[in-house]
Length: 197
Image 1 (tube, rainbow, N blue to C red):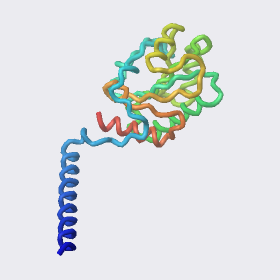
Image 2: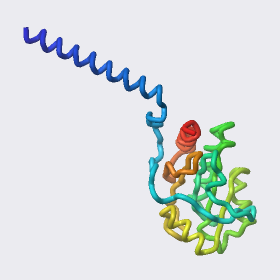
Image 3: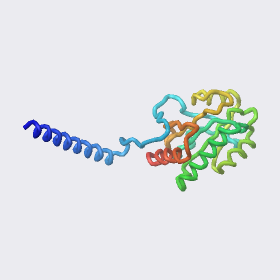
Image 4: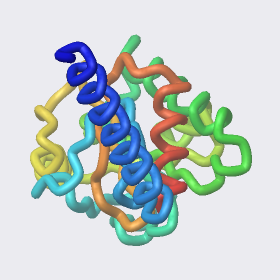
C-alpha cells in the first residue's frame, strides 16, 4: 500500500512539473524579452557607468555614442604601439564582424586610444583599417581621454587587460567581453543583441 502511495505521489509530482515546464516554455515563447538570451560575455545591463563618450574620430569629426543608435557598438581601449593584446583583440573583433555576415553591417567597432600623445589621427586611421575597413578610432586630449577611461572604469595608461564593451542598438552598455573571448563568442553575443533590437 505504501509503495502505491509513493509511486502515485511521484507520478503526480512529475505531471505537475511537466505542466509547469510547459507553461514556462509557452510564456517565454509568447514574450521573448523575458527569456534570457544566453550571453557568453558578462551581462552588466543597468550599470551607472559606461554611458557615453565624446571624442574626435580619426576622420576629424566629433563622435558620441548616440550617433550609433541602431547598431551594436563594440568599444575597445588600447594604443597603436601595443605589441600583442591590442592587435589580437582588434583581429578578433574583425573576425567577429566577418562571422556575422550581412549583420556585420549593423556593428560599429570603435577603438579608443589611451595614448593620444603618440596616436595621431592618420596613424589611428591606418591602424584600425588594417583590421577592418569599417572600424573607427577615437582620440581626445589628455583630459578627455582620462574622463572617458574613468567613465568606463578603465585604468589610464598603456595596459593590456582592457575588455571589450558591447552596447545594444539603443546605446545601452549591456556586456563586457573579456580580452581572451573568441571571435565566435563575441559574434554570438552581438547577434543576440541585434535580435533583441
